[in-house]
Amino acid sequence: MPAGTGRGRPIMCLRSDVVDAIRYLDRTAASQWDALPADFPHHKLIHHYFTSWTATER
Image 1 (cartoon, helix red, strand yellow):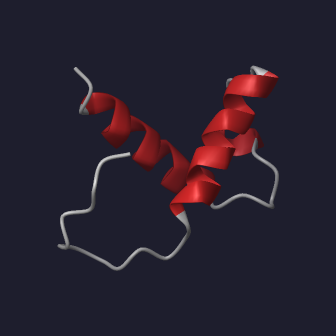
Image 2 (spheres, rainbow, N blue to C red):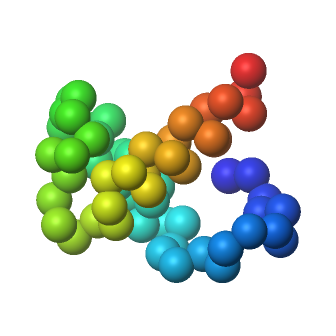
């Protein structure tokens, strides 16, 4: 995972929860972000982290 820049809002959820949600989507082959169980953070937050982390790999 990329290190934080120290700018912006403070992190309100654990990154491990975000990674667990992304792994859940991968493991269940779910293609809908809003189909995440309520145990995970909000699907828009998960999608934001996913797109920002994968954009840095290119």
